[in-house]
Image (cartoon, rainbow, N blue to C red; front, side):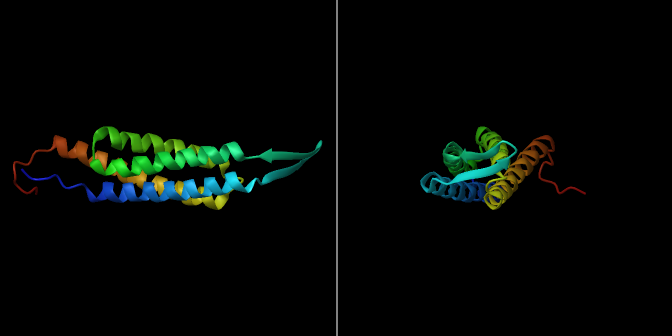
Length: 140
């Protein structure tokens, strides 16, 4: 009985998701502890924004990214689908938060989209591989 080797693209996707998740957790914890308040000027005066709840959302999304990145290397269909769903949710959260932390949003969205692209390419390859049966002969 031979052990099934994990696909390298899924290992890379898992590593990217874990990296994005760790970065997200660390930056979220930094925002929770800082207590910074953002201010904008409107016609009625100054408006103060407390983004502590958004920071907790970043911590939660980072934990989800790390957990999904760790299990995506198992190459099971449900984990691959979970990686795409979690990746889409994280991208939406960071695009909403981009005006306040644009560099953080750019880093996490870039890593997450790269991982989701690898996952989608892996799923497409599985689907194509299931259709075509070559019976051990090379294709022309």
